[in-house]
Image (tube, rainbow, N blue to C red; front, side, top):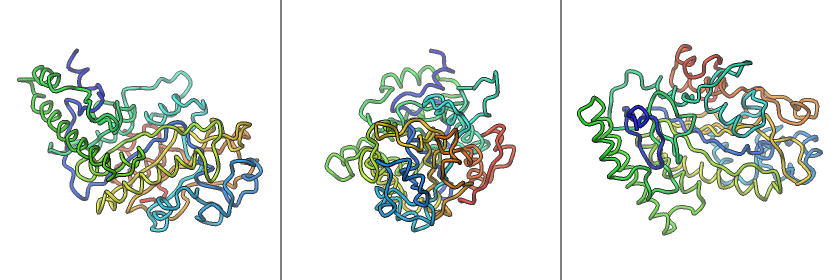
Length: 398
């Protein structure tokens, strides 16, 4: 295998040789992107309680106004989040942006996930995408330019493989959270790879990358053992969220994690049921993450996204199908929350996109660009590197 290929592979449980290590001070902003793969139903998370059309369109799966947790005159929150996200809302540490997403109208999970993760200019006829360049990798490159090398990680994917969003010129670490005892690169393999780089300018970086990988794996394996004794909640994301928080609190400044199981075509449920259960688990995980971050929560922003929303009307199987506009979550100790942000429209039949879905009024690159400009003080030129062809939109969330 050629050396340049080794530097770009994402291997389960591995910190990649060549991963750049940057200084992270307590004041360094932390950004965690949580991707809900499968397209969650935003209308049963952020409930349009003021819309009579919502209740007409969902006779079996709508969340009753009396059951929804009131947010403002127009919106309520799914009751499954009563003990997790709703308290953050009350503290002003949670905001929601409805009618959010991409202008991609393929309604294909994979197509739209790729579109969002790459963050490149909206496709024009005949245009092609560069699948070697995700927007969080470009952000890491912009933030890391000129920084001194140190013993702290800059970016990390908490996934089995490095996802598109973090692929690019800057080699990025990944750590599988479900299979900590089986690293993608064994000790002997690491020695072979390190030997290949011996007496080159990358020798120290490669060796250091493997040392940090081993340290992280040891720490997380110990936490897995503690969890087996009931110290941490059994549900998957809640368990993973505490581990992610510990790493982001100490060393990781840009993080990514994805959670599946949101494609609710059949038997979605309303205030209770399939979707409510998943939202409850997600909310508990995010609340645990916030708690575990401690004082660093004040310097942390979590953005929860999904590839698209779902049809506004329920289908014949008491579920929902692939849609368009979604609702993004923005959480953090320094977030100016307790409000519904972004451009909005009255929820009724005439405002649906193609007479079936929420429209996209808050384009995701503009939203992320506005956050990044406020969090990191990026210039227009730097933002153009992260999101070419997009204009940042400051929603005043941080």
